[in-house]
Length: 308
Image (tube, rainbow, N blue to C red; front, top):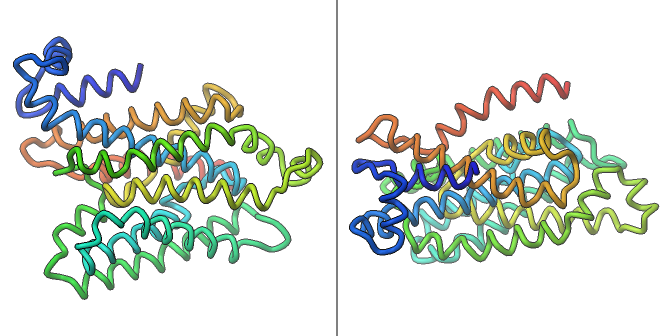
């Protein structure tokens, strides 16, 4: 219901408002077909794919890192993807279609560094957060340095830094779609493994699981999802933190239910936030990342205080 309402709200809102009846009519070739199909529908679909990817990525990371505050943006994985992505965008723009591959490499490298820094006879939640903050700061410095070196191309990088769906269309949808679908389906297939991992390493080993191998594989799935999202819209934070917790409050800890529900709610939240971002101060449009930060920071501080 959240996703459906967000889609209708997103397609219907703009300089020309459309009623739900007009939206449905435009989807099937009515008078508003051009507005719906060429302008608003691709942006709504892309927002849904981004929200789905980041929310499921956060859900996986919270399980495998045994940390309720884990999120692709907070612990540095998105920053690693963003650093590699912005290097390609600014220094090698001809390789634009390869951005997801390089962003995935950056996300995985950041995850490996975080594991290496946080590991001491096992993974401790607080070490993961501290290591992630350090890696995120380092990658942020790298992004700033690249922007200084290529200051003549920095306008596009500003939208990338704040996470924006502006000027995005069907080409970005086609770019992200395979990464999002493969990642979410892989997470759904591995949902039983997530259920075992959250019980603790000892319990998972007693059930015959190779914990470290599965943790690395699941982290790769999370990194792929985050990298795909970052490569198309930039650094969009807090989706992976907020959505899994809200869904978990409703459905409990069974990841067989959590994965699809988190994907749907993440999609709905980003579509709704993007619609607010582009209509609240119309005709001026603000990046959706700013809206997500306004929603996410109080939520993060609440859970940080609760976890401490």
